[in-house]
Image (cartoon, rainbow, N blue to C red; front, side, top):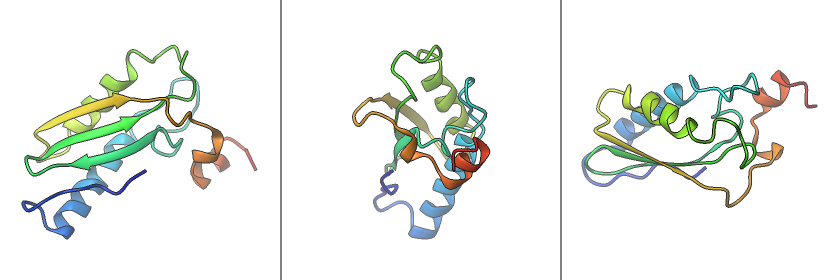
Length: 115
């Protein structure tokens, strides 16, 4: 995942706090087939915040044929819109690079007994 980007309106502390709040909300969204949140699964590839407090997120799914492919971006958008200060959210689905289990956090791997 790339670091969040911002320009003149947010200082580094404010940007870090906003990013932490976005990540906290992303951790409330779960893949219904896997009992781990989408952030720990490594499904979030990028979080960018611009001057106008608009958030762009690039994300993927564990598989292109995921049964919730049509709903997941809406769940992500809804979660990020709950963050105070966020003015707009755009979620872009990508399969490049394809997701694989190596993108999962240690926490997710422990949760799924993948060690």
